[in-house]
Image (cartoon, rainbow, N blue to C red; front, top):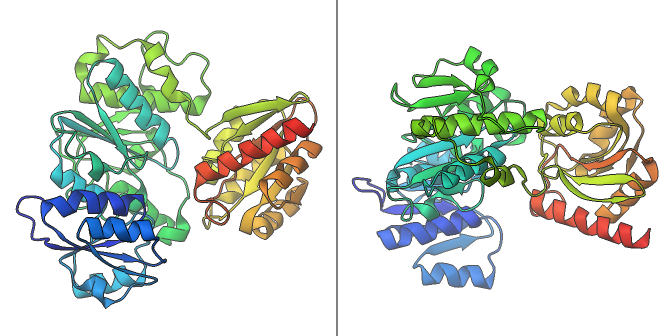
Length: 427
């Protein structure tokens, strides 16, 4: 455990990717680990826990989980979960995995990126800029490897973390030297309960910064916040010559924010930017406006990473011409009314998927935008193709979480890409 920390008995709540990383990181540091998992564990998971000397419970959470000096919840566990509520009532500390990682790691500099949308692309861009400039960064967090998995290798190197509101809400000392907050729009209200609670969780990225640090923000957040750090409006940042030509607005914004963050971390880059061709590949993220192919003059675009209304609005705005939109999944409790003007203007029709079909049918009914319910991905793509005309785009940008039908947004995107291949072969 971190030097000076009183946490010897640690309960990890949830054994997904983050939970496993915590076990792997904390077991060698002498923590007595207990894992509390609501579902049944697999034989492989039980063997993994035995190998690391961890005790566990499965199929629910009991008071055994509270026999601890510290609880570390997996990011998807909401703060209103009964186990966490009872831990707070008893005064048991609760910390995020990124908080523990921060206390363990000794990076040269920490750049943390959050926002409702664009986090992954911007984080990858910061990493690509620093890599192209020979700074050898470690990129981790919500983007892929949990931060705690990288605390040993990041010693003396730049650390670039994507951080979500789920992770930030349980931070205390977490202090990035460069904090990037890209944007804010309604999202995750099913997890946080209110828009104010979601905003407060995001704002924790700035909470421990000092006048020596940097906060990279858009103008609307600068108008709402008074960060102690030195503030940079990334919308006004000038890109190096030849960078970002032809990019759609939201990607150009991500590139500006990343360039601003890299320049705050390493000011000397401003005078000697790395070659853009070594940075540009980071703009292409899987399942984010990924063109899968074309059938009969109709392109099919996978934007499964569009998991909220703000992201889907950006996707619609980036496409010229009419769109047949595949929409739905597990909705997040609000913000969807903002989509309606764009849908009226651009959607030839919508194909509704997942458990939110009735919700979106009621939302779309007054707009006059035609819609059809669909079943599996094969059915959704067949319906979308029949509704589309040459020159239209079939766009999967569901504006919802995927967990009603899929493991995650990547699994959803892969399923729709497989459905496209079937449709293309049968056409």
